Image (cartoon, rainbow over all chains, first blue to last red; front, top):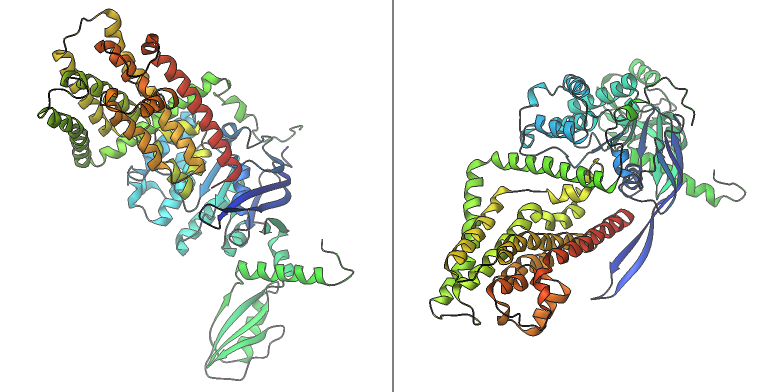
Length: 330
Length: 293
């Protein structure tokens, strides 16, 4: 069971969308939010689940947590069918909805934790231990007695993550855990999740728009678009499949003709500043070294391709390949 | 499924105090969750003590105006639909207490539609407690005691001024009306909330039946059209909250031609309503889980 801790087998979710077309007339349309998705996640893995808005990410998470019943296929989490035994599964999973807090707005943070303690019937010693650990690693010590409404977004997110972990869940689902957070808060959240996964062996599935979340946390990434699994593998592979490019922004001492440094190519020049695109699978270090030795360099920075662009490119390619005769899409 | 892994998989079974999954354990879990969440809401309101005192008083005063309206009418006439002020006070008091009880316990269920729309219902669905209990305890507010208190005061007035030949049965009818009536109104709250799974903006429709129904019952049935009476007797059985049993206590006939024993039926009606509401709730939740919002 540990190898197939989370298991989806040709899972589908079809919604009936009704649209008003007249005063009383309504048009019914079937929307396949999730279209025959299969994957397994072994116990202890940390997986990134990405895709554009409306791709079916949240729908998948909702089926994995038992909120939604699949229209077809088979879902198992820790051997449990989530939609049939939702409350039994609830004690073994933790869920963090990035944009919806589960903390009690008007009460001190600690009160929300006490409620979890009682609602999940967590043994006292384990509760103490888990709370102390979360408080230390997520730096919540000074916040426990502060009403949640007075916390910053980053503090509240850390508080929410702690609340989802007090009952020792075996799986943690995070829906956009770093959305809207500043750089420092993001770093704290990521460091904590990494520790949780390596030290405690908690299986983590996170959806995000931030490629850096995935880069720093997940060895494996799954890309979903239009309800279909487009990619499942290591992040580096995604860059290759997507042929995405990173951008090197170079500030020179003065205006110069476009820099020549293959495989990078200049895509834009604006006075002394130049933008160079290079394959995301290449290391930036030799490129930077070469430019620094050949050109009068003032400053430079590397921009990561954003996930939407990578996916868009991947999607376009897939479509192209379908168009070519004699080639099949795998 | 062989677990060769050394990791403590067993910890789940050894610490699972929820072992039994019968209907009673669900009820027990539900009540337990309800108590915990209600307690959290009480603490939340106590964070704003002054506001609590003011809204509690406001609640008491606002509901009292209903009765002031009746008093004003009686300053012009001696009876209303053949009923004296004291008799109406009995109907008013029992209706207000029964409704107040349901309102206190699960009065915020009309917020369900909003929870469906903004997605916060999902956060309840991932908790190890029945969703109905969690939604019922939502926004639990002690200020709603105001309505019950006010109903009790008016019922007290009715009992001291009424000239009734009290029998043990008639005495017993009073608590029965309040409790059964509370459950009947409660069932309407739950049924209305279940409907909001399908139509998320139906909270006003629900309020028409709950608040509207409670106001209706504060007046004698003789004032209303026969069709309306049939509706609240046979379709949405609000008449069993206080009209049928109340008129028995007052020794007056019910305007519709119904068997006399119906005056004693409220507990049965309450049980039937709760069963129906429970079924509607389960159907609503099932539809939500299969369609999403």
